[in-house]
Figure 1 (cartoon, rainbow, N blue to C red):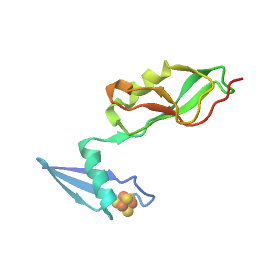
Figure 2: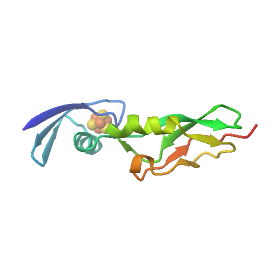
Figure 3: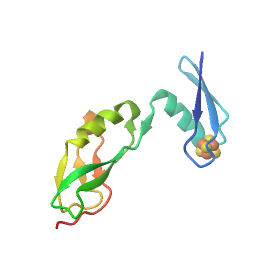
Length: 120
Ligand code: SF4
Protein backbone atom coordinates (compact mmCIF):
# COMPACT_ATOMS: atom_id res chain seq x y z
CA UNK A 1 0.00 0.00 0.00
CA UNK A 2 1.38 3.43 -1.02
CA UNK A 3 0.03 6.90 -0.24
CA UNK A 4 0.67 9.78 -2.64
CA UNK A 5 -0.01 13.38 -1.69
CA UNK A 6 -1.31 15.59 -4.47
CA UNK A 7 -2.45 19.18 -4.74
CA UNK A 8 -5.53 19.33 -6.92
CA UNK A 9 -5.08 21.96 -9.66
CA UNK A 10 -8.60 21.76 -11.05
CA UNK A 11 -9.81 24.93 -9.32
CA UNK A 12 -8.36 27.79 -7.24
CA UNK A 13 -9.10 26.02 -3.91
CA UNK A 14 -6.09 23.73 -4.49
CA UNK A 15 -7.21 20.98 -2.13
CA UNK A 16 -4.56 18.76 -0.65
CA UNK A 17 -5.52 15.20 -1.55
CA UNK A 18 -4.08 11.84 -0.53
CA UNK A 19 -4.41 8.85 -2.83
CA UNK A 20 -3.98 5.47 -1.20
CA UNK A 21 -2.89 2.96 -3.81
CA UNK A 22 -3.53 -0.68 -3.02
CA UNK A 23 -2.90 -2.75 -6.13
CA UNK A 24 -5.51 -1.63 -8.65
CA UNK A 25 -7.59 0.12 -6.00
CA UNK A 26 -7.38 3.86 -5.46
CA UNK A 27 -8.86 5.50 -2.39
CA UNK A 28 -8.94 9.31 -2.44
CA UNK A 29 -9.06 11.34 0.77
CA UNK A 30 -9.35 15.09 1.13
CA UNK A 31 -10.97 16.00 -2.17
CA UNK A 32 -14.05 18.19 -2.10
CA UNK A 33 -15.67 17.12 -5.35
CA UNK A 34 -15.80 14.38 -7.98
CA UNK A 35 -13.65 16.41 -10.33
CA UNK A 36 -10.87 16.43 -7.74
CA UNK A 37 -11.24 12.70 -7.15
CA UNK A 38 -10.99 11.96 -10.88
CA UNK A 39 -8.00 14.29 -11.22
CA UNK A 40 -6.16 12.69 -8.28
CA UNK A 41 -6.60 9.16 -9.65
CA UNK A 42 -5.56 10.28 -13.15
CA UNK A 43 -2.55 12.05 -11.66
CA UNK A 44 -1.22 8.92 -9.96
CA UNK A 45 -2.10 6.56 -12.83
CA UNK A 46 -1.19 8.62 -15.89
CA UNK A 47 -0.32 12.28 -15.24
CA UNK A 48 -0.96 14.52 -18.24
CA UNK A 49 -0.67 18.21 -19.06
CA UNK A 50 -1.58 20.52 -21.89
CA UNK A 51 1.69 21.47 -23.55
CA UNK A 52 2.14 25.17 -24.33
CA UNK A 53 5.18 26.56 -26.09
CA UNK A 54 6.20 28.48 -29.22
CA UNK A 55 7.58 27.48 -32.62
CA UNK A 56 9.56 29.52 -35.12
CA UNK A 57 7.59 31.12 -37.93
CA UNK A 58 8.92 32.51 -41.21
CA UNK A 59 7.40 35.59 -42.88
CA UNK A 60 5.19 36.31 -39.85
CA UNK A 61 4.62 39.65 -38.13
CA UNK A 62 6.30 38.01 -35.10
CA UNK A 63 9.25 35.60 -35.07
CA UNK A 64 7.57 33.02 -32.81
CA UNK A 65 4.10 31.47 -32.92
CA UNK A 66 2.40 30.36 -29.68
CA UNK A 67 1.11 26.78 -29.85
CA UNK A 68 -0.47 24.18 -27.58
CA UNK A 69 -1.39 20.54 -27.63
CA UNK A 70 -4.97 19.82 -28.66
CA UNK A 71 -5.25 17.37 -25.76
CA UNK A 72 -3.25 16.63 -22.65
CA UNK A 73 0.14 14.99 -23.25
CA UNK A 74 1.65 12.38 -20.89
CA UNK A 75 3.73 14.39 -18.41
CA UNK A 76 6.83 12.24 -18.93
CA UNK A 77 6.86 13.14 -22.66
CA UNK A 78 6.57 16.92 -22.24
CA UNK A 79 10.32 17.63 -22.44
CA UNK A 80 10.75 15.43 -25.52
CA UNK A 81 7.79 17.12 -27.19
CA UNK A 82 9.24 20.56 -26.48
CA UNK A 83 12.55 19.41 -28.02
CA UNK A 84 10.74 18.26 -31.16
CA UNK A 85 8.88 21.56 -31.41
CA UNK A 86 12.06 23.58 -30.92
CA UNK A 87 13.13 22.36 -34.40
CA UNK A 88 9.81 23.10 -36.11
CA UNK A 89 9.55 26.10 -38.45
CA UNK A 90 6.20 27.08 -39.95
CA UNK A 91 5.29 29.71 -42.47
CA UNK A 92 2.82 32.58 -42.19
CA UNK A 93 -0.03 33.09 -42.63
CA UNK A 94 -1.37 30.85 -39.89
CA UNK A 95 -4.87 30.77 -38.42
CA UNK A 96 -5.64 30.08 -34.77
CA UNK A 97 -6.38 26.35 -34.51
CA UNK A 98 -4.26 25.35 -37.51
CA UNK A 99 -2.33 22.13 -36.91
CA UNK A 100 1.39 22.94 -36.92
CA UNK A 101 2.60 19.43 -35.96
CA UNK A 102 0.66 16.17 -36.23
CA UNK A 103 0.85 13.23 -33.84
CA UNK A 104 3.60 14.58 -31.62
CA UNK A 105 5.85 11.81 -30.28
CA UNK A 106 3.37 9.17 -31.58
CA UNK A 107 0.79 10.28 -29.00
CA UNK A 108 -1.91 10.89 -31.66
CA UNK A 109 -2.07 14.40 -30.27
CA UNK A 110 -1.70 17.36 -32.63
CA UNK A 111 -0.08 20.69 -31.84
CA UNK A 112 -2.16 23.70 -32.88
CA UNK A 113 -1.59 27.45 -33.22
CA UNK A 114 -3.20 29.55 -30.50
CA UNK A 115 -3.34 32.78 -32.49
CA UNK A 116 -3.53 34.09 -36.03
CA UNK A 117 -0.25 35.17 -37.55
CA UNK A 118 -0.39 37.40 -40.63
CA UNK A 119 2.30 37.42 -43.28
CA UNK A 120 4.52 40.52 -43.45
S1 SF4 B 1 -10.95 18.77 -5.12
FE1 SF4 B 1 -12.57 19.95 -6.12
S2 SF4 B 1 -12.79 21.76 -4.83
FE2 SF4 B 1 -10.79 20.85 -4.32
S3 SF4 B 1 -9.29 21.88 -5.68
FE3 SF4 B 1 -9.97 20.03 -6.73
S4 SF4 B 1 -11.65 20.72 -8.03
FE4 SF4 B 1 -11.33 22.29 -6.49
